[in-house]
Length: 143
Image 1 (cartoon, one colour):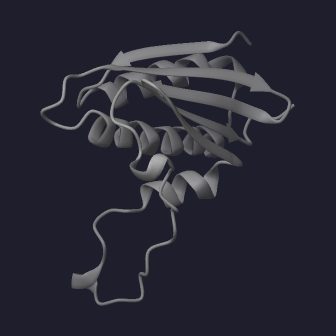
Image 2 (cartoon, rainbow, N blue to C red):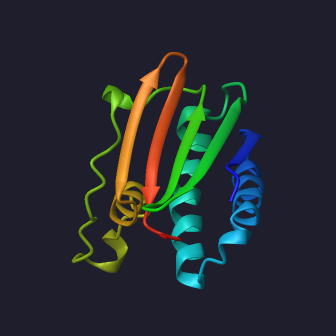
């Protein structure tokens, strides 16, 4: 399978467009429904974070690039953008939220990094000015 390259401009519809292109490119791998769900969930969370935090409202839109390579140990994805960097130069810890609380005290967000780090086998973030680079390995489509 050839490498997949996706590039979109940050916007509300960018995540949907990027996921559609990425999943179409993965078609030749014949992923099962669970594997497709893993790729889609992890990438949706990562891309939504970029749209919301790297290119927040009021900042100019910019490119979001995805490079995907299939290897024997799964899918290797690199996501780059030219938006704002991560606070403290690293990803959030991604700890599980405490759900043992009253319904009205349930958190509305904060699940994204937990899901990414739980589902991906490797997660690395680097700020290489002027770029953010997030690399992920998903244990799907392993040969």
